[in-house]
Image (cartoon, rainbow, N blue to C red; front, side, top):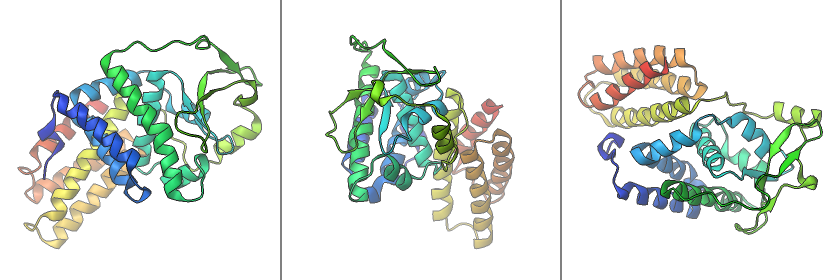
Length: 297
């Protein structure tokens, strides 16, 4: 099995792999969505160039606030117009979907409703992943962000809270159809909207750019561990079940983004792995996780 550590490289091949992973996700059916999203995130984590780019644009980004602005308008979905914010938002969104903090089927139904789930998924990928792919490519090449006469336009909600101009995506429209938020499309931070936001199934905690990268890396490493342990014939069933239980606790701590719990559950997992003789086959993963856990503190 190829570990992501084995492909950590600055080569242009990985940038091409990013484009390919985006295309695979865009052209995929809903049934393969989980794998395609995971593949895309793994490509990002495997490339030092992409890793650095994502880390840079995430600096100071508030996903919680952007998620509130993007969703909750009767099936209409908004993307940030700013290229850096668009990249940050979509990356965070994919991360939460990958870790099951956001339930994909519910998200699609709420924001890209259509006649069937495959059409909903197609609307999502063409209207969210395609702009993400293009934005990452332009940011990677260092292209200046295009300015329009309305770039500095600000929409004010009823209570005076400033909301940046956003792309408006109509779930039933073609992928290239874009509108800018105008007075008729203002996002009202009213009591009704706040009530609706509070009733959402997820309320992600605010992340720093370092935390988001670290959490995603830990989750990917946990999947490496899962694959290696599950396929091993060198330990008995009781040992394997113990490791898988500790691994599940570790994954849950990552998903909850609880730093102290991550540290505690990892200690238990690490001990179980070493006790069962995985210290050699998982040495690279354990070394990297050791480093990340220290950095989290």
